[in-house]
Image (tube, rainbow, N blue to C red; front, side, top):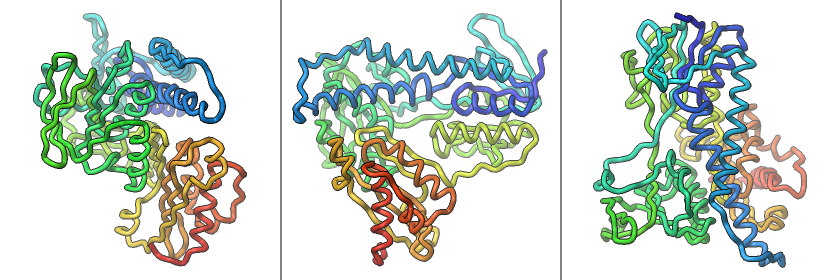
Length: 461
């Protein structure tokens, strides 16, 4: 039986980063992955969806260009070619991860791992045979899977989750998306640009209920402009097969029972942790998630858990940070995780990006908060792009001017969020931001404008 210093179960953004970090410490490392390297993020999540969102953005630009005096022939769309490009992007990134594993001398095992209390790992391959390895330390990074709630009729009606939606072979005429969170609204943008009639059904009173309320309102208006039907405070009652497709029966906020006919259904209401690899360990749980301390340690010595397994921010970049921290601690360090600066990004059109505390969180922590908002409608670069929907919101402590949180809505804000993230990481102030020279014309100079207006205003929000 082969023995390793560190074994990582799961090859997603938490797992492969952990494996590389442990290998860089000079340890022998094994990585067990049941499917493709890269996990959900690379294969069925972040990368394929962002590739298709880029296609959607180009389609929207072509359609808008006519009003700018740029005319082309009739627009035609090939879903086959779009999916082929998406697959090529995935393949290239998979190859990059495999190369990193090889360069780091990480032993990669393809199969489903089951961790035993003595830290032996039984790896069930695709055939009848299985392998067993042992490790001094184990990092659990098996991620999550789409959650499908118990909806009446769901067992009898074909529907998609975010795992299967990329297998579509034709652009659907219509789709009902159950769930108005990040996954739901991103796919709404994709399908609306492809020409699909899109309806989004959300139980909460607004889209993106975990995001800034003003950002949710801005996105609501933008999606309405795209022709998307948005139904908030609406409960899904039943799925059914109709004569010419499928039917989603709902009760709207007025108490009306409605039937929504559609060609396809996407259920996007959240994710649940994949716990099969740790079933034999008897770990302490935190609800449906594995409980860990600030060092990513579970209740079993030498067993660490990261990423979607532990709840919290279910984001790829957070999972990678946790994987790195777990690897460092598994190889002799004692480093706590720091969640103070976590950028949150929604890749809709317009994009939403935020970092730091919300207004409510800042006030609950005792800060005397002052908030300023600057509209994108007066930004020169946004006007030139023809994309003026959005704003910058700055949340800061009035006493010392420390920047506590920032919300951005607009084009490419997921790239711009790094600037306020750095300020918060360094405990920067609004005055320092206002005294920094930003390039002109740029979208990011709106960050300067909101800081300058914050300094000029003496009003407390």
